[in-house]
Amino acid sequence: MKVTTIRPEELGPAEIARWHGFQRAVPGLDNPFLSPEFTVAMGEESPAARVAVLTEGDDVVGFFPFERRRWGVGVPIGAHVNDCQGLVHAPGMGWDAAEVLRACGLAIWEFDHLVDPQPGFDPHLEGRWPAPIIDLSGGIEDYETLLRSRSSRFTRDLPRRSRMLGREIGDVRFELASHDAGLLDTVLAWKSAQYVRTGAPDLFARPWLPRLLHRLLATESDGFTGLLSVLHAGDRLVAGHLQLRFDGVLAGWFPAYDPDLGKYAPGLQHHLGTARAAAAAGVRHIELGKGGEDYKALLANGTLMVGTGQVTRSRVVATARAAGRAPVRRLRDVVTSSPALYRWADRVRKAHSAADSTLRRRLDPASTR
View (spheres, rainbow, N blue to C red):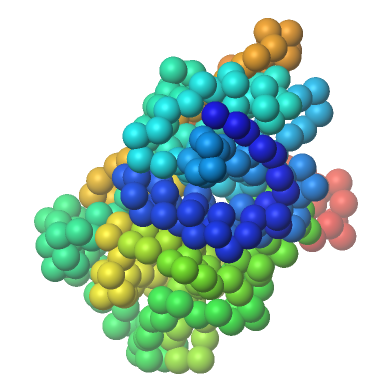
């Protein structure tokens, strides 16, 4: 096997078609985060982005997107915003992880959302965690029947709030695939404010991330599209969610809603609208992402497994990285995979944020934060 490393923008139409073919031929690889479109878009923002092209003779048999950082440390492409990671490969193919890293010039490759299974990387797993999904393969009627049996919120409360939203704000309508860049800016502003309000790091303080999301929203090719699902009441935007689709898989990303309309349960209304519209559009399942948020436990009717771990070629680099990062990563994985622990951590974070805001106002009455 030969491994050649290139920049994402060097991928040609033949390589991209081959990449799509592998995604369609191997179960589990049809996640849009594993698509070449995500890799190429991320390459526009990251000078460290690379793609390893694996060949046997004249045949391309795999693609491995990654980012190369200092000291030979490798991470998945778009690491902190990439919800599905791994090597996209031909059916039945195996590989030697250490040899791939050597050809890429990497001493270590760390991952936290490894697709399951990955023949060459599975021996390096440190943990496997459930990632909730909405499985629509049985049809929307079966899914909604399950939701109604699970919680009275779907039999009485949510329909009542939807009617109230229509009466008080305007006719409620849902659109699965808007490409309105202005609406995306509004959704990202809501999400940024939510991060600040709850004490979480504001991802959108990094200018490259909004640029990436706008680039993906404008991308549409063979099976892949970026889309913004939106819920309106009259002329008012209520909620939005940037999502990526490849064939029958829809992956959610950065859901947000107008905080002034919280009494109408806009988040749940939007997610239910997404499930209905996605089922009608031929989506098999919606990936909600690893995490223990309450709404995921309420909406999910299935799970996929994702892996965390690292492949190492240098014991020195691995030891140095593990000393500062591994315990924190493992603790984060445990917390985010448990709804109960996630709720507890979320309450602690919000209490800390509220106390910090109060202290800031007392020390500086002019502060708006």
